[in-house]
Length: 300
Image 1 (tube, rainbow, N blue to C red):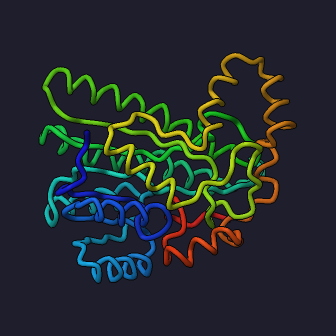
Image 2 (spheres, rainbow, N blue to C red):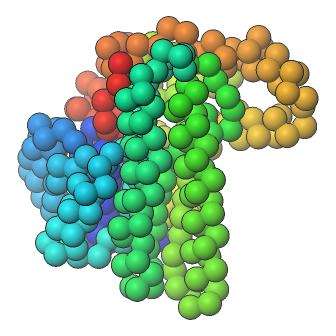
């Protein structure tokens, strides 16, 4: 089992959303230090003050995870100022939420740079240190959209399919190193459905797939890390989708997803951070500014 106690944790997108919640939970689990990367300087300052007032040792860095140089510079500073990262949460991501023909070239480029290249570059920056130390855990936040197509999510879904394939391959490589060197390296891939937060404001929850509560899914992810789970798939229907896609003809699956479970219409009223559901507002009152999953504002 991966111990969080006395570990150094780094979370991208850690100044808001479930990134911030997971950071708080790691500190509550006894992590020795928390490193937060985010593009939002105000959010970083507020989170550092909030966590510092609780006695947590926090290091914040303004990082543009779409930019390789920014990642490399920040990783170098972390190595010098903090030390080897034990647990890495690759949490940062964006969603555009438009039909493909309405995406600008910049939308496509930025989504791939943040959701795919950023995740890989960040893991690459820290995995060598974990291997050298003989222990480490990388958690990659993918999405339920890695399992199913969905209108108005073409680029986002493509990016998350990429994360799933890469993350699972990385896991196998780390397990091979464990077998050869008796190390303790782990990779967990998280595939949540819609989280009830600003990032997916306006979405309609598919049938039998309720919106996830940020606090609850954050707890599930932390527990998965502690038990070295390979995959986190929530809510339950996300576990069923790969089976349905595997056994059903494509047109039959499309009929079920589009007409019975309402998956293919779930983004039809998407607004992103411009609209936050009343349920989210209720949770935000309870959780302070910790509202969502992935930190970087969605491109509208």
